[in-house]
Amino acid sequence: MDTTTRKRQIWSTNAAPETAELLKSLDARMVDADRRLLGTYPGDDGLPQPVHTVYVPGGTYTVDTPALWGNMALEILETVSCPELLAGIIDVPEQLAAEVLPRLRTKLATNPIEDLRVDFEDGFGWRGDAVEDTTADETAATFAMAAATDCAPRSWGIRFKSLEAATRERGVRTLTRFLAGVAKDGIFPPSCIVTLPKVTDISQVEAMTSVCEFVETLLGLEPRVVRFEIQMETPQSIIGHDGRIAVPALLRASDGRCTSLHYGTYDYTASCGIAAPFQSLDHPASDFAKAVMQVSVAGTGVRLSDGATINYPVGTEDQIRLGLHLHSRLVRRSLERGYYQGWDMHPGQLVTRFATTFAFYRQGFPSAAERIARYTGDPAASSDEPATVRALAGFIRRGLQCGALTESEVNVATGNSPRHLSALA
Image (cartoon, rainbow, N blue to C red; front, side, top):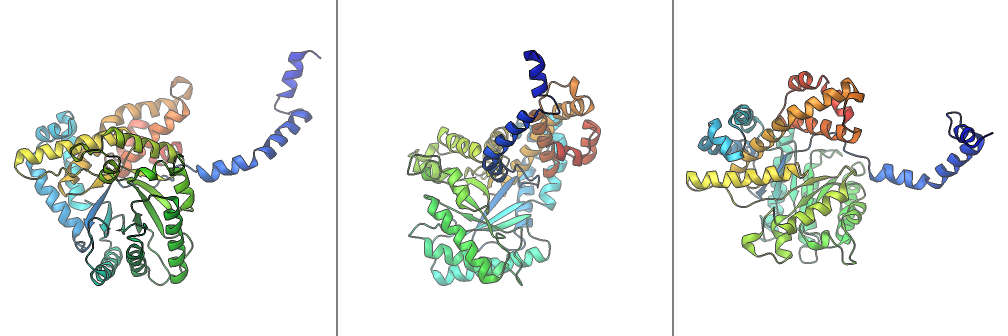
């Protein structure tokens, strides 16, 4: 038997006995790696990700907060209420701005806040235990009422004080009171997510996991129903004390409870020694931290959120437009870099959050749809790799989920149903 024939026999569909033994040994050798890969990198679950997180100070949240913010955003929209003005604010062609404008008005009028945090940390400060206890209890009761009447945002929760020594007792006290207040009859609302701030050591995430377990046991809840996000606002949360990238260890310490990582613009850049006038989302120090976060969570299913800008659209009409333009530029920059969520701290920022997000997806949709249609119609005629097709389908799915695109538009342009696109993604 010549060498070529022997090679064909070894690698034929009906493998030779020695080939089967080789594969069996490889499976045995790599069983731990295969299990680790599946457990650590399950991929995106496909559920909608909010495009933003709105922060309001503790003691200010009411059931009407989303509607109030939406109304204030609509008032600010009046300063750029024609396609020509909006196009200049978000740097897109006037025709695209005309497509965005009615969607933007509807969004602000009906669902202006997708994700909400009531802040008991920097936005609340120190007001004494009695005041914070009462405010935490009232916030929990208000969220529970809003959720029961379908008036709550898609997801909601609080940011409590950090688990560093100076704030640990107060933070845990507020957190446990709040969690107990929103849990009813052994059921914990799946839309509730809390924020762990100022992480400087893996032990703080381990402690947070222990607090969640304690609350679940105390209240008779199912395991792992209490989830949290980690706010990445210290250099130590990016590079640990041992010089290693800290993010993977933080995720492991969360025991599967961490839903997302949120970048904290001002604390992080200040901790890096950046002078106050230059602290921003687009500073190179911010880009470094966010790049480390991004590569660390890729494939894990943990999501990312960019931080905030405190250059609000307030003042004269020119100052309002300047603030809107700055915010739009930062939102667009984040989207282009794969950060599909960010913080909004002022009602006016809802205008540019949604306008820029809608424009981003609508602007990229024609090309993405054409490539998807070509690939699904005849893969041999497409130059796109399967990984690229997944990214294209994911892009369109995000556009659908946020309201930038409609199902009919997607069906017509891609020749595929949204369900099929989700399978591709």
